[in-house]
Length: 75
Image (cartoon, rainbow, N blue to C red; front, side):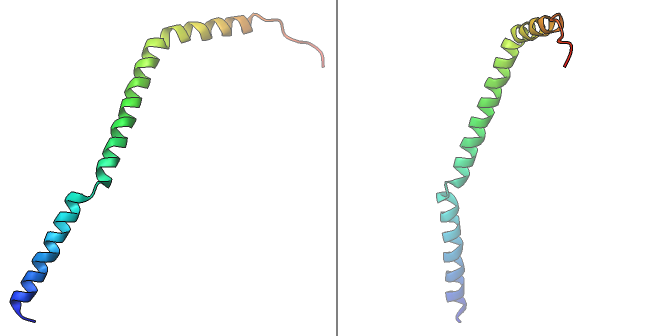
């Protein structure tokens, strides 16, 4: 083959690869999912931090109530 033809074929393949790289949208979708997961994590952390005190009080009350309950004897 002539050098000119080989060079044009290589340039064509490189240009096609570059075009397909910029037209590929799969990476964008993955980034969107990662951002959504991060937002959910931040929202969960904030909710747990806000409700943490009241949940601790609730579980302590339940634990104290169960601890003072009479036990069943006999089987």
